Image 1 (cartoon, one colour):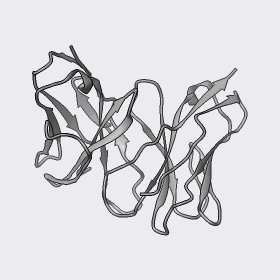
Image 2 (image 1 turned 120 degrees about the vertical axis):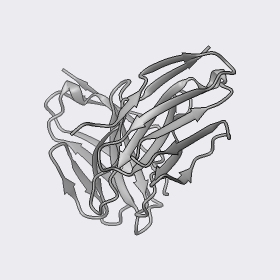
Image 3 (image 1 turned 30 degrees about the vertical axis):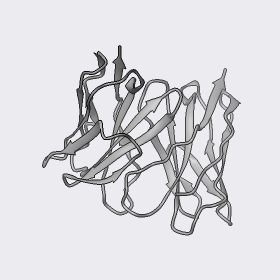
Image 4 (image 1 turned 135 degrees about the vertical axis):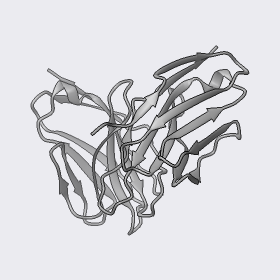
Length: 111
Length: 114
């Protein structure tokens, strides 16, 4: 599975969009990009995933560059409850449960 | 729909003892994975079970073991506990159906070894 690089921390004002970048320059053609977040002392929560097209769900949008070497998770209207550690993970399409978590980005949403 | 249930939530054990943690996946999910989370190492994959068979294993010593039952419930066991085994142990389950979202994690079991 490809390695990912994320900034260690980011701040965002409440109500504004939070844009969390992830670099995965060694991603291969069959690998998906997954995003999870972990609020303090809870288990990670699945947010969204994608292969090459942009994806949107009720929680967030995922923008993947055309060369697939990087992606951005967008929380359109950040709230204080979005303060968490966000993990970008690249995972192959095989049915294996192994997720390789990096250090993630700690997003602090401020009032 | 009930989520992933892990028991117990908190546990204190003494060095040298063994411990068993339990995980009940979401109904219908046959894949169960275990992770260890520590402040120093972050989230690390332990192993994965599917249909009662271990399908994948992380880089942990043999003191860490697991199993899965026919109802997909899973247990993990740590023998001869060391202080460094103190961690949050997380279980995650997933449907194998195409297009299903990612893994759903439980709230974890926090193990403290003294």
